[in-house]
Length: 178
Ligand code: IMP
Ligand code: MG
Image (tube, rainbow, N blue to C red; front, side):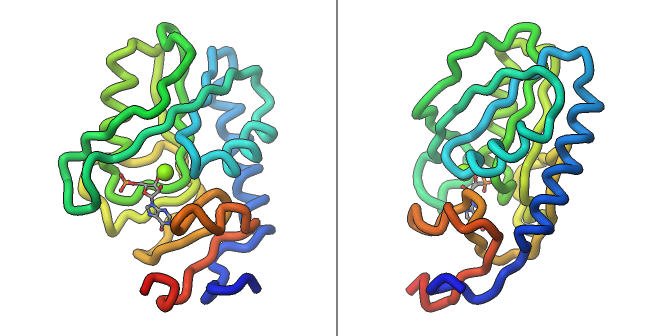
């Protein structure tokens, strides 16, 4: 196992099965829709690249990069847009793809922001969900796995920009934080 990893929480096989299942469900739900998949950089890119290959509908892909104002002490949920979409959302069926919903503050801001651009519909697909930590009233419409309140890495998720390339979801050793 990779240095610094305490345990594997979700295996490669479990991930593959779940992503296939999500892709099939999304393909069904978006038949005859004008699907635009919006990935939130950078955490969602591994999940997004697997997910879109399991969606049989024609679709467009675009990306946004956001950062929260202030650190975790700041609970306003106001985020700064570092990179905006290139696609006009009017008439599009938008599916936001995220790595994890934690407090939900990022997604609740993004949802409001994208809704103001008049898409035909807007839904959220998050690979992971940590419901215990929620501060904003938001639920992903599609979710891979609910996990307990532990800091996880891998499959796109990072600690200090590392571990994104791990093919599984893992819990870090406590000593990695100190
Ligand atoms: P929130 O839902 O606004 O609190 O923020 C979600 C963002 O925090 C995610 O997109 C991740 O970038 C980051 N995040 C939250 N929990 C974790 C975790 O356990 N591991 C890695 N990143 C996390
Ligand atoms: Mg993120």
